[in-house]
Amino acid sequence: MLADIKRIISQHQDALEVLKKLSGRIKDIALLCQKALESDNKIIFFGNGGSAADSQHLAAEFVGRFQKNRKPLASLALSVNSSTLTAVANDFGFQKVFSRQISCLGKPGDIAFGISTSGNSPNVLAALCEAKKNRMHTVAFLGKDGGKIADYVDLPLIISVSQTPRIQEAHILAGHIICELVEQTLTTKDDQK
Image (cartoon, rainbow, N blue to C red; front, top):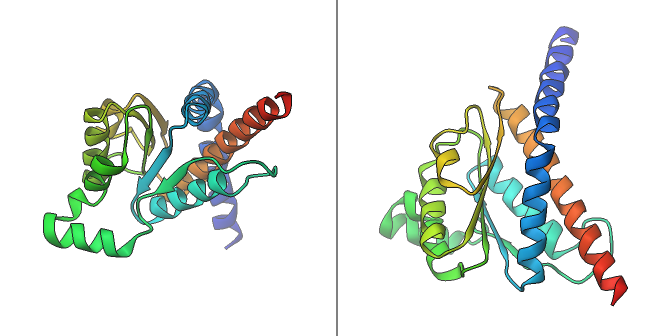
């Protein structure tokens, strides 16, 4: 068991090294989020399974608070409404559970923020394609080689390791960094008014 613990920690450290090399991309995503929120646009997160949980987590950090008391920042996760998810999946197929929501909730200047550890989730890809039609900005947290999604988004962040749990750990850290940077910048600007 101790050998497994050390192996898992080493894999985690490898994923963090990949993430560290992506610092410039994290900065670009944070700036995009900041600009969208300053312009009264919103960030729409979506993903499946653990990535759905990460979507909800990050949306909550923006709407609630991360570390500072400040005004709420417009963000939502598309996986939270079970009635919508099941109705769309039943009537149109699971591949459209996010794209159908993007088509009516996403506006030009909003950010469609997909999360997929494989980079190949068909419903995440479909939503990002719909977002492009709506003239939204597109961001994706991805894993492995980025999959099909990497080619469809403005700003992909690819954690190029093979273990799904390690990819998810790096994704949530990147998300927390973005939340912290955006919150610091926007609260500093609010304090200066």
